[in-house]
Amino acid sequence: MYYRFYEDAYGIGPHEGIRTDEHKLIHYLYGDSAWELYNLKKDPAELHNVFGESACAEISKRLQAQLAALRGELQAETME
Image (cartoon, rainbow, N blue to C red):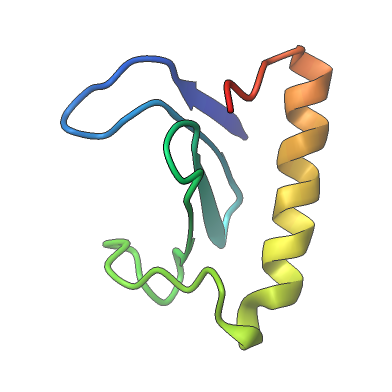
C-alpha cells in the first residue's frame, strides 16, 4: 500500500510511504529527504528505525523501488 501526507500534521512533515504486511518504509519529502524503515513484525510500535542497517539493505532497496514504481503509477511528485 502506498500512502502520502501532503501537509505538516501532528508535528510530522509531508511524507510518503509504502507498507507491507511486514515492513513500513517512510520517505520525508522536504529537508534532508530522510528515510525510515520499520519491521512491523518485530517492532509493531515502530520504535527502532532500521533504515541504513546492513542487514536491512536488500529490503530497503526493494521497498524503495516499489515506492518509486507506485509514485510513478499514481503520478505523484516527490517535491524534493
